[in-house]
Length: 215
Length: 215
DNA sequence: CGGATAGTTGGTCATTCGTTCAAGATGTCT
DNA sequence: AGACATCTTGAACGAATGACCAACTATCCG
Image 1: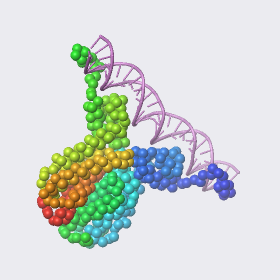
Image 2: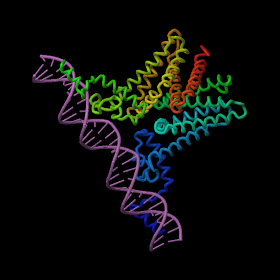
Image 3: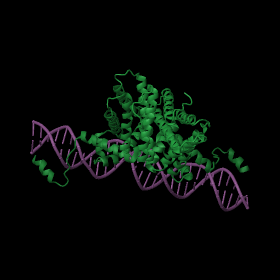
Image 4: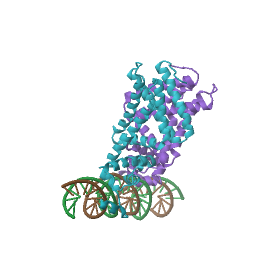
């Protein structure tokens, strides 16, 4: 104990951080770096810098850069799940669909860096592993389907219909993301968010048999 | 002349190729390599190999890798223009919109490598130059708008409506592309193409005032 | 205290990258 | 024929990358 106090007074004293905490730091740092410099520019040195850690520390916590990225995938997938679950008001199927789409688009609009990082990650993973990119995308779709199913518990909705709605939501959200990332025009994106919502509404009305819940 | 004939008989004779032809070869090779290895893996050496040229030749034709990519952007933008123009049957606005969306999706479905390369290029360009990624996207949107305007020459359609329709087409096409690239499931993508089309149809009917041209 | 465990670090390795150069080969003029 | 512009090439450069190691230090436990 007295050693600890003595150590505190030394100039070059460096308190230690658990490997678990360090791994978490590296994941967050990696997302930040990927968002800023792209998947190409996300080098081990930059990630270590961002995490305020030594380069060798990264390989002390992770055997390879690829192992670190695996944890990053989990983080991204988890964030999608959170966003979808948070925008689940347990009301109509139509309303749930609309809120889910809006929730995802608002998430994109709020943090374009996260959006860009995610798109890069999926694209990169598809080439590298083929199935990991699919895993992230698939898990997000699964969350959407679960939210839709929860909202249509009383009505009898065919699972195929749920799948189609989930696909349309994902398609609209991704298309919106690509446009928003390209133009980086927040006011234009806000207008397009409304248009995108109305597209979903129109199709749902036709698909589910003209049940316009709210305008 | 006799020199030429004599040269033909030598084993190590290497006929020459004009710099213009070489540049064209490099552009095509770059697209192929980007589609296969991604924007990260598109190294100067791989591109030179694909073009069956020496590495130094690439820098004889282009000052830098970036200069080569500038030509690649032009090629991609041109291809979008061709696809949109080819699917312009000069009929109804609704019909033109549907055919344009279908044309783009079919182009994506036909050559996933071109699709992947394009998405990577736009994403990469956004980070590198900010405006070049926008230029490609914008030029494609412009082609779509022109096609829509041409189809609505007799009707009086507000330019804002044209812009919105073009945005929805681009959004649906890009969202479809991301899904198709991720799952690489051709049969599923074919079904989703139909769904995506019906989404556009539903929205257009509402937006233009219930004018269901075809089911 | 003293040893064991776990976190920390600077320096180094081979590899790959984009780029450059000098020298050679091929055409095309006069 | 010889001069000149235009391709062509092997080899090399410095910079950056992912990975690794041996030495060092904080923390914990008996």
